[in-house]
Length: 250
Image 1 (tube, helix red, strand yellow):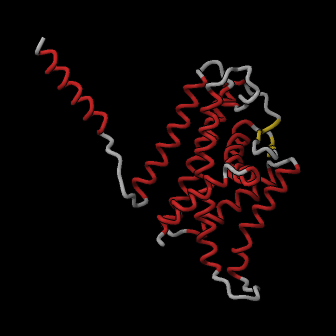
Image 2 (cartoon, rainbow, N blue to C red; image 1 turned 90 degrees about the horizontal axis):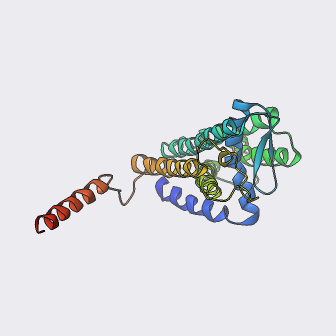
Image 3 (tube, rainbow, N blue to C red; image 1 turned 45 degrees about the horizontal axis):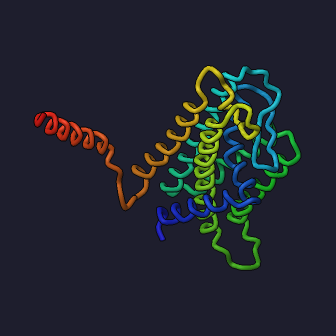
């Protein structure tokens, strides 16, 4: 199978895995790590990753409005990183996907992650991703394993998980933005601001994530279909013609 087929397969696996209890937590932090690193760089503080799949930065006294904008930037960057990793996959640069994320995880453990669960998650991810890289240069297995193939599949899967979690994260924020402010499930910093309607930010975030994914699919992988972006204009023209015809009869 070609790379495009594997991307679709692993996108589906990442989506299903992201809905299962244990895997949901493990997968969610791939996205949270990128998102929260952006927040930590912009507002300061340390990163805490929690067993329920959520995370936050601590130690900041920023206003809710500033927190919302920083959170928006974090979600946007995480989405772009997912697209970027998928782009590297389509160009055959599989090893760079692993190198980049391992480097990011190591940097986060050293500089930002400061709770036990987060450190354990980060170390486990580094160990998981770094193992095939080590075996690539040190053939110590008693059996013959094609390490290059393992790297290819791990990189596609990692990029797929990060992108799917970006979509799920944007959807969760969008859903929370329509909840009442007294709802305890409304936890995202992005929906706490009072200056910009939370629903507007939620819809914008989810819409841009979907649009970024569509742009990637349309330009970098072969799809069996394409969306006519002028469809809305065609429908308006048809509506105007019908309205003109009907108006002319009365």
